[in-house]
Figure 1 (cartoon, rainbow, N blue to C red):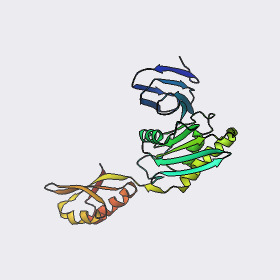
Figure 2 (cartoon, helix red, strand yellow):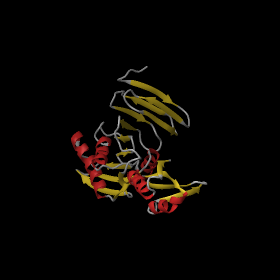
Figure 3 (spheres, one colour):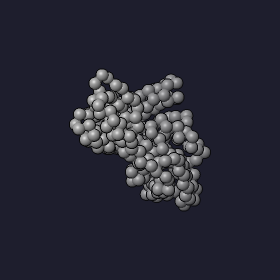
Figure 4 (cartoon, helix red, strand yellow):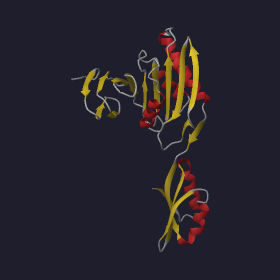
Length: 268
């Protein structure tokens, strides 16, 4: 049994395990399709939960899920990476290799981790920030000294749908907690600042209606949008188009002006 502050979830055995639990003050977190047994030890609180996850792809490490979150939603524009990026730095004889990539889902982030993670390295620490959720791992480093600084670097660059993996090859000199925070956060931030970014502006499907006599005005209004389809009835023209979410009100006003108030626009 567990209370609000501490708890234990038993190991789940089998080729596929699915665990779903809800933390008070947080969202539900689901772990799906881990190929080996899973042991989750949770520190229950209203701010964060740490789990130990056994996975054959990489070494056993800790994962921290932060919440509740105020991350960007996919209905709003957001900045992300245009492609993969890499940065390397030697800090007190330890080699820190930071690699970043766009990742629109945690599944994509996991695939990237499996691709670039090096089991021969001392640690493969990482962080992923998506829409409404973010996750990180210290991968054996002292708690809060690696995953969270990497995540902070992603946040400080105002990036979403981004995965960063920082691999450390230990050089024989211990850095201490503060040194680890600066090292992991610093190489992640430099990697992201050197990377090419883009602003994603989501498009929304909208439907325009107007009398048949106003067909010309409708097509003039939508000439700079992505037309999906058009239909006709005995009395009106119906056109579906995709438009930048931020331009819906402007398009509605243009339609009203062009059709002398007889046209309408609604989101599909």
